[in-house]
Length: 557
Image (tube, rainbow, N blue to C red; front, side, top):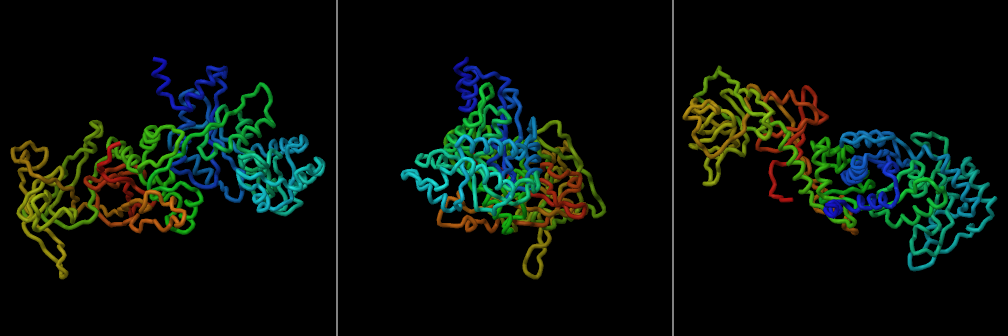
């Protein structure tokens, strides 16, 4: 049994189990999700969120939400607010809301002590020279001429940097480690730079800001995080993470441990914040929450559910090697969840009028139809039926091929939850376009009536909307934003070259009156069309619906 349990553990859980077996106390377990508030969270972040908060749930351990806000040039309160909303929407609750900026004073004091210990120095070279002197992993770096300046001199300059005496780019504080290390991160990394920009939380208090590598690990230590989990790109930063920790660690405290997992790459999506910024800034999309964006807010607006995303993350698993995941797997889990919970409704996205000539002109009926056949508790509702209805233009052909099981002249179909009709003739406009289909109905075939005629089988069933009761709706058909699987894989091409010109198609259609009861974000299946959700831009005068995903796909996970 123990062997089976061991097999079920992912490699991070195994690390934690080993630590517990080797003396770490369960109450010392503490995790964190540490986003930088310089953009909106995307689908890749959901993996880190689910891993950290999932471990918190598994081990009944607290999980901090800590914002690594060390770069006021790119950070804004808007991003902080959006991140909190996204994590909450996914169904997770953090223990404490914390900020690296909470620790700026402590980080500064530790840096001063490192200067005193001969572990850091003020360098007056520009960043370009520092980068050039680092050379490459196979060639030793060149030491800065300021590397061995007297401690008192570095202390004085560092304090004056803090006081704002020097211009941006004129000085930096660097750790004194090893300019010959094959790991480039260990070649005297910059710890502080001068940045005279207001911070979204500390205002104008600081003129110097800590670099991410310095602030991140020390923030983990201050919070006594037991396991600092991050994506694989930080694996070669781990020696620096540990070296910085060596400078401040005190016996008896929890020594935080960095471990890395493979990030999540999904076909037809990009997850580079820099590139997502470009999409927004250049107007390729309509903001961070555009339903074509891979952001959590975009996916939410598109109609994705927390359960579908979490089920997808669980299926992908926690691995040590990166790979490209097929977007169809994500869509499979979305479709699977929506099939269970989405209310069924009827809408017509490319309407053509159909008149039932033998149905009384002044008559209307309210027919029963199910809200969700997958959910026996979903109940039924009433839909209005009348002489004139809208059907989909593609559901009719005057002369149909043998395998066309929809409506054609002389052939019968069933109208969903209503009657069997037969098309008789059409009316065209001056351009030859069909503007009206004329049909007859069999009054004995009403669905659910129990009559012998109602049991009669016909090959096609169509969705429809009563013209008299129809509610105009704007239907936004979203497709993939890119035309290739890996839009940012081509080094010689700009990823914007692969934008799909048909990523959004907007059509005006009609829906049954019950559509007016739907709340923003509530999942709907427009029968025979796809899964949709009511958009945030909807008003009482104009209802807007976003397509979440198509009804069916041949993909087998």
